[in-house]
Image 1 (cartoon, rainbow, N blue to C red):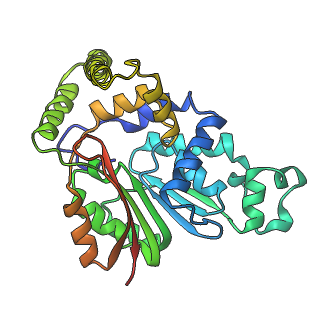
Image 2: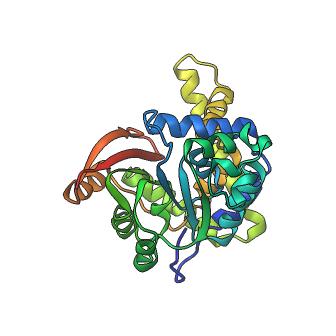
Length: 301
């Protein structure tokens, strides 16, 4: 998700379109469980939920089925299309205007969507928009939960993206962020890997992803051997499926190709938000590794 036209931009939506072929009820359930853990089992019934950079739409679906009224948006038209396809496949009744529980059909009442409506969730709208468009974001209003997982570091303006996103959180509401961890020299190496991806012809990019993935999977296997563990990666791959319903291959494509690319230390995320009136409720870091640190903040003022 980026609206900077002066640099390469990874086609996240095209990767999500390929990922869509793997989505089934098990992945939907995994995404729901992951969201529930991230929010410490806080009820979403009757809450408003903004998915900033909705990508595949899987988390938006999970929030909707949990009882939230959801607004999803993405800068990438293909991601918007993916989210609409997820809605069509797994919550088709959400495409119909329903004024209240009395208008839910008998068949819908037995579905996750029907139960969500009875509990108070009323809508799921999917929009095209930018996390860097201040005026457009303001027009959306405020939300009980604002969720942006692995998105704002791809806008080309991470700090500005966080500043604008946090303004959409209602007082007392939650802000959920996942941002690439700053590894110093290692992050600079990843930036070189990503730049190389975008310099290659399209037909060679999958080979580059496969080469990088193979090198790192081999490194991980050697580390497991050193720890006297099974060197095969299948347990890690199962964990990846349980992590927001993700796919190993599509995650590698996203990681190697994802550009623009910014990173941040926990201090760089927490301190500005504390000054803006947010308190940290939960943090999950990657330690010295690579990937996203997860944050949950509450807006106190």
